[in-house]
Image (tube, rainbow over all chains, first blue to last red):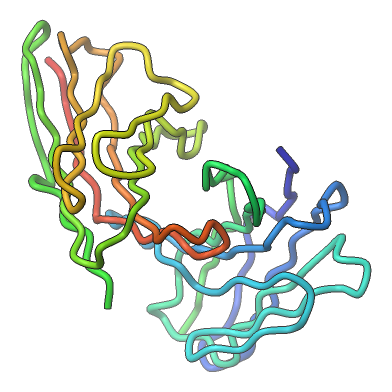
Length: 112
Length: 113
């Protein structure tokens, strides 16, 4: 299973954009890039996913490098409720169990 | 919105007891998963199910079994609970298309005394 690397922690100020990086240099052609976040005492929550093109939804944007070896989750205006652990995960798009391999993630602190 | 409901948020049981953790999803998803989450170890897959009555072992199935008699319900069973099974247990579901996201419940924090 391909591995991802994320910084252990990041800080942001409220209402500023946040860019959370993820390296996945061993990504294969059928791997989708998924982002989840986990707030304290809750289960992981799906944020966004993509294959090759950049993606936008109501929660965030996902920017994927042209070689797909890295990606960045963008929160356009951080709020205190965005403080969470963010996980970048690769999920094989075909013939797999759907198993998600969660690493340690990035703990995002948002300061008022 | 997808709703995955786990029967208990907190549970305390004794060593040797048989423990049932229940999970129900309301989106007619074919795939369901059980994970446990421990500090420093992240989430680890215990069992998953492709469809009704189908089950596959994950990475750490020892000491656990599962049951999927109905599509919406996936049960995790600790046959004889031990203290090293004290953990946060998370259930997830997903539709058949494997590039779609998994939707998680809020978890059951299980303590085995």
